[in-house]
Structure formats: C-alpha cells, structure tokens
Image (cartoon, rainbow, N blue to C red; front, side, top):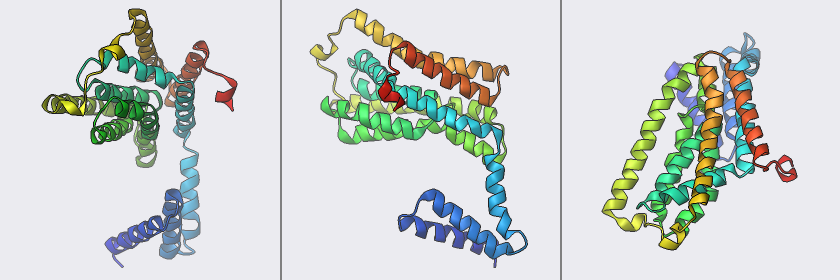
Length: 276
C-alpha cells in the first residue's frame, strides 16, 4: 500500500471518529497507535506510540504550558481583563467603531499575557460581546471581531501553539516567538483598518457612544489607563530577559506567572474565590 493511501485512510478514520463525537486527543492517539500496530506489528509497533509520547512529555520546555495557563487563569479570575476592556471602552468610545477597535487591542494584550487563543475567545465573548451588542453594534461585525482577534493568540508571544509546534518540529521556541511578533501585530493593524473603513462606509455598524457614556471624570480615565499599562509591564518583565538571553524559556514563563500573581495580589484581587 502506498504512503498516500495510508495517510488517506488514517485521516478518514480520524475524521470519522471526530464526527461520531470522540475527543480530539483520543481520536488522534487511537489512530496513531492502531496504525503503528498495523504497519510494524511486533517490530516496534507496540512501543513506537508510547515511546514517542513519553519522549515528548519529558521535553523540558513543556513546563512552560502550565505556567502560561496559570498566568492566564490569574489574569482572568482577578478581573484584570475587565479593567482592560473598561479602559478601551472609555478611551475609544468617541470613535466610530471604537469599541470594536478596543476589542482587537484587548485581544492583543490578552494574547501577550497568556498565549492562548481560547482564553481570548472566552474573555471576548463574556466581556466584550454583551457590551458591544448593548451599544448597538452590528452582530455580524461583533462576532467577526472577536473571532479574528482571538486568533492573534497563535502568533503573539508567548504563544502556546508555537511552543507545541517547536516541540514537535524540534525548532527553537524563542526564534518562533520572535518570528510571530511582527505578523501578529500586522494582522491586528489590518483588522483595525478594516473596522475603521467599514464603519466610515456604514456608520450603523459601529455607532459612537452617547455623550452620557463618555462623560467620565479625568481621574477615572487615568486610573483605567494605568490598568492598560499593567499587561505591558508583565509582558516586558517576562520577555525582555528571555530575548536578551538572561533567562531560559521555562524561567521566563515562571517569571511571567509570578508577575501576574503579584499584580493580582497588589490589586487586592486574590480572594478565596479565586483560589477555589
């Protein structure tokens, strides 16, 4: 049997399992192990799947994943993401389509804080979506903005997807991160440009906030602006030592997790409910 036919059968079997409601990791792992047994049998088929899995699990940079997940959890549960959205809400509300632009900015900062696209999608759908719809934004534009913005987590460091790709492809994680920064920011700029152009052509898609909603004391605006600086500080504390070669990847992820935890403590957000 040709390699093309084997690959086609494996992919078809995996899709069949996914369509029947099986878990993604279970479907991929099951097909891989069964294929190894059928192809190599007693000459390594029993060991190749488990040996490969154990080899990946022993990969030292994999320790970055729980660090980034913990960092994202702390930033989400401590409501720092809420402060970020309020900042964009206040400062961008006077621009047509400003809340949608602010949502893209929120997604970039969330991606820089935890590296997970799923986290950006969850935060955007729970925080930004209700507010945008309540302010009269077009439903199709709102959902598109959240989906597009959350995809930036794949490129903006510290991207968990790039960590996994580096693990599988045996490539340096740091170089992949550096290679993803500029494309990620370019995509964010293109999303913002699209929002601006569309809202100028069709103002009903992204109306300006009313004067009452924008009538906020300057002191409150400055306080919210400081909330937007916090993620940048966490990102800099984590990435600058790594880029300069002062710390390793795992050490930088631990620094980022510690900085996020310290920020939540200083803001008085680390309550018993967060730990539970």
